[in-house]
Image (tube, rainbow, N blue to C red; front, side, top):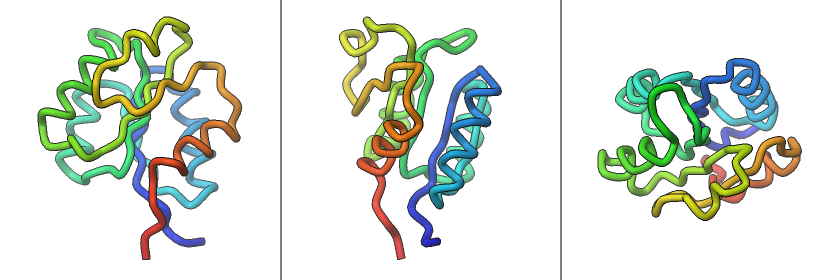
Length: 122
């Protein structure tokens, strides 16, 4: 299976992170996971992702705040998909967030969204 992109999943709900990571790995993506903003920063310092999947509500911060930080800290070209159960989130989404994916989402919808924002690489 060809390499299709490097995805960073940021969510403080470990079962959700594991589910997403496994599903995307099965599709050929390289997946890194983080449960906190600090973990996410460490991953980004080590490797520039092709896409970030980001939960809206994280302990101690919000996905919107993290997205703004990422966009000003050298990740302006990296698409961010905000994942949330908050139906108001699309209206709250910050500039730089490409899409809000409402939880619970269908696995096929997730894979389709990720595929839309990543490119196949040789």
